[in-house]
Image (cartoon, rainbow, N blue to C red):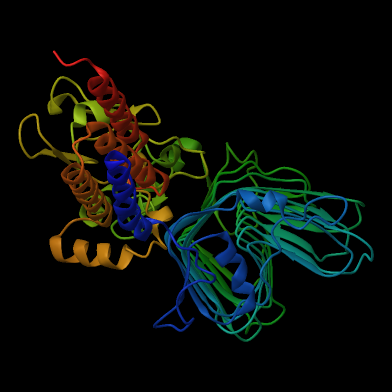
Length: 540
């Protein structure tokens, strides 16, 4: 009886200590939607809820896997998936997080727009990765309706919309039916902001854009980056496209066509490049059709990978070797100090944007992470790669030799310079500080799972006052709670089995909410088994 009472008290104590750690559901995104207090988007449901207030301010709080959209919106014949957010006129800051695997398949008889956003008005979208999209738009019915598709947005209008530091990858398909109103682009389909300025800068698209059409007499306009610019005062600076463009009546590796019938609607396309294969009607390496009011400067396209040596006088064709030579771009005035970089190991040797792949900034900006027994835990760990175009560029890996001097870092199979990642032993055979933080090590602390945990504010205070990263603050808190529970249980009962069982239960809970890896649970499970064996052994 006394033993049962002890066990019962121990379970109560365990429950009291564990319950506060269980993540609580949050019915809606946090924040008020203002510039000073934007709505924070934690999951796919929050992202979907943006359509309820399209003029508000939003920020991503973590990466979002949108794979579930493949099973959204069953219409009796197929899943339509994601329904684009219409008429968004607010601000969306991705904070350099990723939205991956967004799926949408739309068959529409009326006017339709395709993208994460169907229509962008007077909006700002910035600092976002939109990776592995799978978007399809099939026009039905009348031949004179409008159909615009883009990875980020199908149609842009309004006063002074801005797109800054957005990266898209995946596939986009449109079937043309109208006379000249079926348009698609890897980043944006159609831009028409008469009397206002649309600014797009430091963006990249690795979207495979494809099209098909019912009739050879209609026009289907496809661009690797933007499909069509019409009567818009648009500036596109320091952007590139590396996706293929196939199947259109007019196809451009970067932009299909610009059209401005009067001088007041000028467009500027500066310091851009394209490398993707361009096929089908009127293929052009960079731009297929150019308005006399469009000014182009310092643009290039790869004549070999694109399969075409033609362009509408907006860019200069270069061989692949020339496109992978830094001087090709610096001699044209490109900024390789603050905007662009180039390495034989990154982006297949083509220029890349520093905001998504800058090893120097990564070492400076990303907090240190401390791990125990690095020789055992870190072997084969995957390192982060800001050039990860939806799996196009494999992440680098490193392995430990007999000592830290034996570290090798490889990206795409190529040995990386020693200054890309830095390893600083604190003590021989002890902990190591690794900068930047390896992405696969987040299994020890999954911040995504803990974003809505009620203890997160306390952990943030601890991390801000102690100098620890948030991950390490969670890890240290978990270790402290685990030790405290096991000591408390041991003080109440002298049974090693129950003490080990308490530790195992807490460890499993921590694993389920993302505080540390399965190896901790396995370790304590072995300890539990050992305790049972020990207590059942006859006294010698």
